[in-house]
Length: 179
Image (cartoon, rainbow, N blue to C red; front, side, top):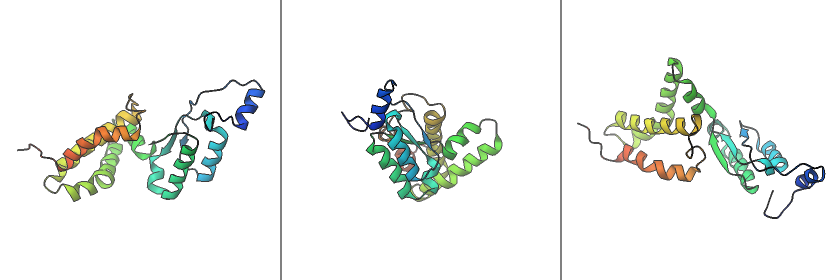
């Protein structure tokens, strides 16, 4: 349903041919489609979609405007968006027992996630602070995207940020009781 009280032509047609209404239950994954394709899919199927999952890889390689356009299209249909999938989830799923995958994840975390931040804000103990931040991010990624622990897996981004940010801030700039 596009808006409260509004019945789309698709819903009217499905009702006419005897198809019962279906709750928004699907969670399609956008692996990097162009915005026009995503907008067309949402136009046709928004009434079935509970959440649209945007690949984290899209954020890293796509033009930012294209990704934001997809998110706006989802919002215009009342569909929340989540980020996930992409290289981090794939690496987390493959690191156990695979030395090469573990090395790739260490490199990804060190060079892309933690390293640049820690070098800037935590010159006193960058290795330890970086490892602490990495432990929080990897644990969060594993719990939320791989194990899909509830209610963390379905929590909105703002809730997760509010819960985790103070820990990350302390790891980066707070006192560390280290001898």
